[in-house]
Length: 100
Image (cartoon, rainbow, N blue to C red; front, side):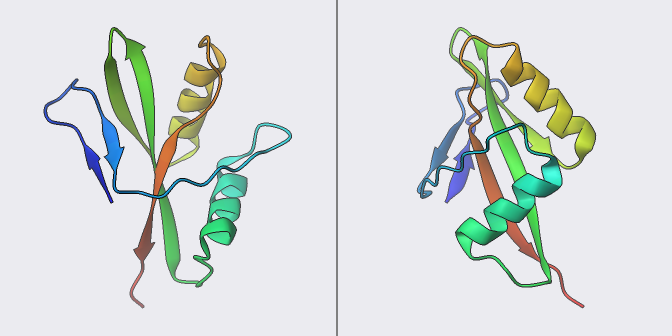
């Protein structure tokens, strides 16, 4: 699959990707999210790093991608969603295999 953004600030879409729904009873930490995604997608190898790309809507059809690389970005994205009218998270995860 791929993330399509024709130009900066354009409507962003995730294309040719499968969809999985993961529910959490409370706000997960970034590590809990990574762990659950690895399990659901079967990416259980020790040398696999999970990266997240969050899509958020800033209004008037403009959607942006936020690369969640650490706790700061995760909290920022969570706070954005928490303050919005529709509180669900849509993100893309990618698998990076680290070479030893």
